Amino acid sequence: MKRFLYVFVLAALVANIFTYCIKPPDYPIEPVITFGSVSPNTILQQPFFKLADTVYTDLVFTFTDGDGDLGFDDGTVSVIIKDTRLPNIPLNYLLPKVDPQGAGNGISGTARIRVQVSCCIPDPINGIPLPACDTLPTSSQLRDTVIYSIQIKDRAGHLSNVVETTPITLICKRQ
Image 1 (cartoon, rainbow, N blue to C red):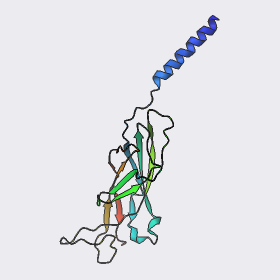
Image 2 (image 1 turned 135 degrees about the vertical axis):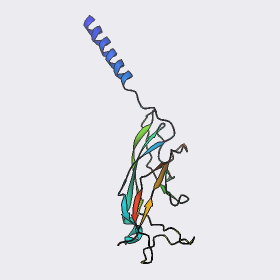
Image 3 (image 1 turned 45 degrees about the vertical axis):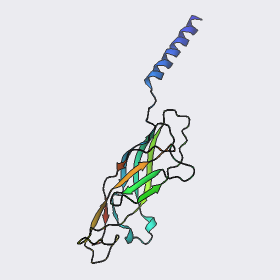
Image 4 (image 1 turned 60 degrees about the vertical axis):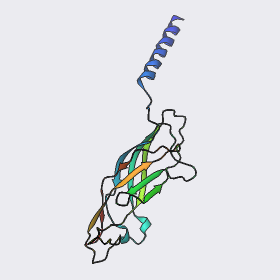
């Protein structure tokens, strides 16, 4: 009987030690994102491809959300990506609905968003804007740089911080 009691007390102590050593994460209820990578980071601009929807850049970021309410069932936008050259034209994407799985301390993970290849936007000449995606021989622009900003929104309407990608080089003209 003493031996049984001794083993029981020892098992309870070991269980307590593990309980206090492994603390679950405590994330804020607003989503928090961190930029991961962009691939490829040098690409030809969109007009060089016969099918514009066949060439992409993958943007990777990590996220945490304290109440685990990411993604929507109804197609509501949950990822806002902006080309910093055109900040008033957002590219809207969806995160799949994440089941919090009873995690009272939130969720974390990695997301990859495929963004269609963009166009070069030439600098104006004498204040006159030039057409985007210009590949004519008269165009002198050889390269352009794209940086995307990324932000996510959860079901409660909380917006994450905004992160920016590393620069992506667009090749405007073939030489």
